[in-house]
Structure formats: C-alpha cells, structure tokens
Length: 143
Image 1 (cartoon, rainbow, N blue to C red):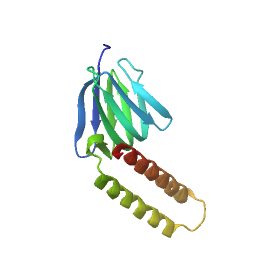
Image 2 (cartoon, rainbow, N blue to C red):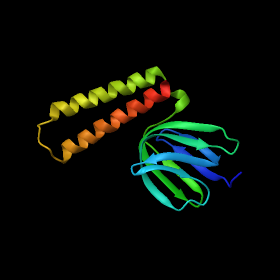
Image 3 (cartoon, rainbow, N blue to C red):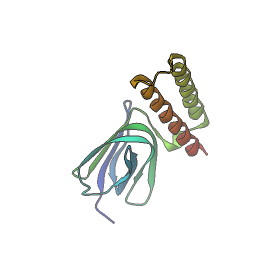
Image 4 (cartoon, helix red, strand yellow):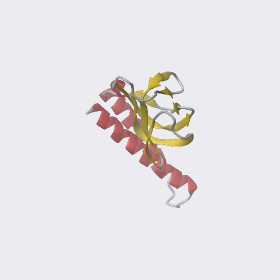
C-alpha cells in the first residue's frame, strides 16, 4: 500500500468527501490527472468529469462534476465544484432535470444570437458544449 493522500471534495452546499485516499483522479481542462502522495503542487481548472476517489482498501467513490478547481499541495488534494453529485445519487429524474436546464439555456442563447461572432457568442457556445458534455456524463452514469 502506498502512502495516503488527504482528499476533500466540496460543493457550495456540503462536503461530499473528506478523508484519506490512495488516489484521486479527475479531468482538468488540459487532460486527465491522478494525484498520489507527494504529487507536485498544482492548481487546475476542472473539466466536466467523473471524479474518482480510490481508498486504500480498493473501494471507490465517484462523483459527477460540472467543472470547478482542483488544488494539490503537501499530499492534500482539494476539489471545489459548483455542481458535484455522488454517482450513486444520479437518477433518471436528475438527468431529466439537468437536460431541461440545458435546453432552456440553449434556447435563451439562440434567442439572443445576432449571428455576430463576439466574445459573448463564443462564451455561449462554450457553455452549450459544456452542458452537452455534462448531459453525456450523466447519461453514462445512469446507464
């Protein structure tokens, strides 16, 4: 068994995980990454991903994460996300609710689209792409 890390996954409403782990794996905006003890310090922006916390006994806790930030320092890994849902709590109802929000957002973006390619339009397109990846992740988790 390798030396453990201290892992913490938090959302605005609660702490989802706080304890020792062998590894924490997630996807940042530049690619997949796994944190073990003595990892180099890092602060990164999270992409939409299934975040995994592997405990020393081999059990795993997973979370559907809609972006956020990850910080690693001194064998402590902290994930902060506006939306993080334990995979076991993702149901068809959650999926349909998130899908409805994404459709409403897309309709609002399309209504305000003047056809000009500007910073606001590009930001809206990125948000729609992120929403699509989020829905795809939730569909994968529910299946």
